[in-house]
Length: 334
Ligand SMILES: [Zn+2]
Image (spheres, rainbow, N blue to C red):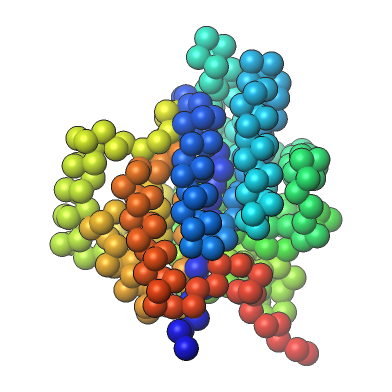
């Protein structure tokens, strides 16, 4: 009997969120199609957190309506194939500017990067609109999951009542060991040490056995200096050969995340390459739960291929569980 492994594959389905958003084709449609083939090949399930306010902005401009139609078609296909579709909110879309001649958006104003700076009624409406949008395209969940744009899920008292009202039970924003001190981008998970799913009620960073919600913390992985050196060489090589990442936009100029250890990084397809594959495999061997956070816009062809090898390894040696509902810890009975 092969040992059970929980492999949680999550994706932020979004364009670039900086000076240039890039195109739907390059940032979302193409890389997600390549990913979909790999997921389905290994019968792996993914969770796609959809940047709804990007889609609502596509809707506003006639010349972008075809992009929106293609995105909806892709989301429906993913959903029909058993992948999960949930909302992801980047509120700085409120301050986006449309670049008409480029057919792209510019999102340089980051003052509303976190929902926490907005009035309560507005936060509530953004959640309502997001879930409504997904329902209208046929995504019908009885219970919902959420990942905050930029991991900004604090202070949670702003969201608790909305979560209850909208039937959001599953939270995916906690990145253990990391924080961002910038007021507009604030989060602090530096005290979080738990690296498997847990219940919470009032603070996503504080496990509480009888909590109302379930947190699925993102996994981090440690690399020694030899692997780091090899990683730099591989990336240099990929850059030289033109495998530079799929998306054609530019990143938001956010503050650098601070982590408890400089040798830790998130488990992610866009950070994975051949230099790190063995460390990823070891990580899987040594842990029961591995939560990936990836962004199709940043995929290289090499990264996807390495991910394919990882999934092949996982399904050959282990009994992988991909459905987050099967990772929910048993509640403590009173
Ligand atoms: Zn995002």
